Length: 268
Image (cartoon, rainbow, N blue to C red; front, top):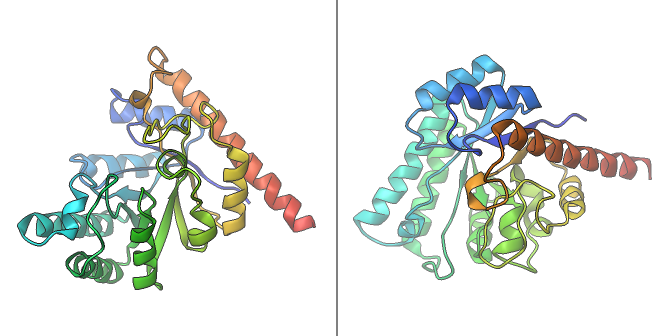
């Protein structure tokens, strides 16, 4: 099975859209994602389509996401941003959005106010035929709420980097892997709260474990790298060519490892 390799739009920083597309095409990236509040979607989506690169999902806004659990205007405004994200995805033919449920170490507790807004989001998404993929951050209870409350429609985005720097020792895939519909693959040095978004292999995460978990889940979609060059000091003087080439090699190695585990398990 041939899995697509993807990378976050804007990962290198400072490049024009045509330069990013050129790098992606040159090094074999077939998919990407961007934020739903990117002001240039009207330009980005047609350009990606013309280049034969899929936009697998939009990342919904997450600044002020804790407001969604709070009563009042601020919470309503945050919810409206998520609703608009679904509408934008439907308009541009993007099949899913990735959503955070909370932020930080002390977010508001799950409550009726927030639950009502999430329920409305799920209704809007179902009507628009857009998947909502909930991403692991720090709070297991929030994810558990989403999958318990919306068992037929809620999907999972596994952020392997977050697992190792935000919640060390906690493993999400054995619990939610059967819901997996999106990946955020990146590396870090497993230092608490240091979300580096490194190219796989440049940190301390065991990507043999990552590959095995993906196989176990049955996921066959894009292996999406969520890279942010500026989040670390490992790549300050790298050219775009060097960065994208290194990222593509790491992503292709991960796909090869996934395929090898899958092929071995099929023979046993």
